[in-house]
Amino acid sequence: MTGLTWVTAALCAATLSLVACQTSRSVDRSQLAGIALADRTYAVEAADWGISPRGTLLVGRYHARTPTAVPGARTVATADLLRLLTTDPSVVLVDVLGVAAHPGLPQSVWLVDAGLGKGFDEPLQVKLGGRLAQLTAGDRQRSIVFYCLLAECWLSYNASLRAVALGYRSVLWCRGGIGAWRAAGLPMTPAIGSW
Image 1 (cartoon, rainbow, N blue to C red):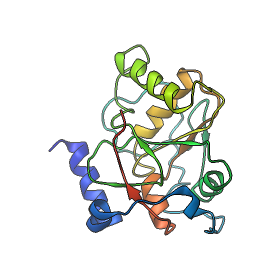
Image 2 (cartoon, helix red, strand yellow):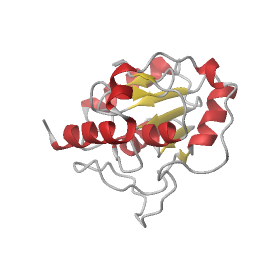
Image 3 (tube, one colour):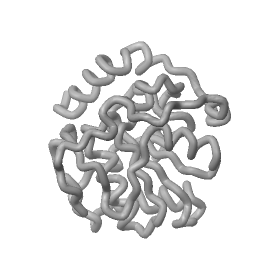
Image 4 (cartoon, rainbow, N blue to C red):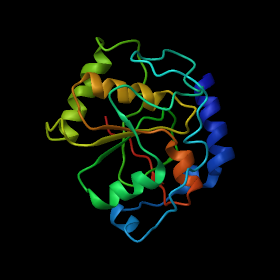
């Protein structure tokens, strides 16, 4: 088991419960409409560890504290993401966690390992560009939200940078990811790979 896979599996078991990681039921976004959240932060999604934003991909050591912002993207808190998902059904929600058998946010597209790689000039960038074009019907103004496990995961940060580099103008980064969503008591659904 790789270091990232082990850390992710351990965090899944510790913070989300192993049962939730393996047996979540499918949830439709319309089921979120009646849920109200307090405007507060969940888990450590707003923690500022003094890390400067960077416009280049982090390579390796993906499980580490992140900056509070991604250049060219907007950081979205869990309560704001819930409101967005219930008011705009066209939002594309992308899970980039690189581990199997985990719960995700409702109606997410799981693009396994989309936050890996070394730069914006490699085959993964082209592959992600093609998949995002399908998901947005070619509309680079359409909102795309990237998330991963926790605020201590660079995979969603990197994927957000990739989308910005591809010319998407409404890129959102859900920094708290699955951990903050779960801490807010929001429903989860099984992650389904979609490359």
